[in-house]
Image 1 (cartoon, rainbow, N blue to C red):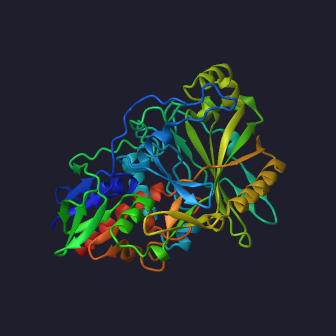
Image 2: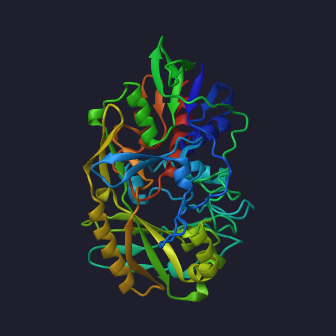
Length: 456
């Protein structure tokens, strides 16, 4: 019995951890889905420019798929390890509301299991832990909370602003995450040092798959059979898996929808300079979950990150960074708003993988953020949201209806006979605002464990 896992990103690594724990690595072959990212400095392209030049690392290492009729693009990576090898961001579970709605409460034990294995929140010194209620880390030696974000409360007629689900993502004292592509020494979830010790890893790029003689054949771009297996697990990422199935004529593309959470960037002014963002955080994210009243159906999230994400190695970035770095870091932060499911965008895909807009809710999402901002600024907080909003080119919260959300979690994972899907497609329906990376890793671990426990 030969088993292949296609993909070594978040889902692939979750599968690896399960195989390792179950002593099954000798039965599984892992395939990298793309080329290795090189460790090289990042340089901006504006020389000089009037605006702050944003970092350019993403453009070097991922692709952008145009969407007909939209200003947005679908972002995805063809690198080994996918987005997780170069993306840095927050780590978050599904909210209690989402877990209940999706019948996924069993994932809680896998959240804890995974977090204990890779120390996703805090230093690898044995003293930081993932809380039993998976809400916020404790016992940090290297940082202290930035208090102005810790006690946010607003009780209104329309919705509530709560910080009970906030989290801190730590990456030592480094404040320039995105400069190395070599993994984070603190085991950050979006960029863990994914070590596949004991696993068989192959690097051929697979373009299509087909069933032949009751086995799955992996085909390259020329149609040559690269490998054959009895059981195949697809861990390529939400969009990449859909493209692979589409190329393989295994997809009913007319009925497939892709969803993308609306993401909006905005500025934050810290009212107290004594907070000293860089001293308190290093590189870190603060997560604020905003739970709306039932009538509003809100379940949004705000990620707060250091202002220095704007600085680059371009001439202007270097000059501005050196002159004003301390001022900006101690007085400002950046916010990233992720919309609720009802405010996500919907796309269609054609037989040749071209995307088009079915529903664009970007303005609705921006309107919601304006209302949230107004309520934040009226309440007694130590910061103010600046009324400068910019829609992100694309969010990282993708999902689809490829799998049937009414099906049992483990049953829907088997897409076809001995063909399993263990990436973000495992969580069908419009995406929650909560980041899905930890959930994807936990889900892939659960499916692999269930397979070995109950199928073989």
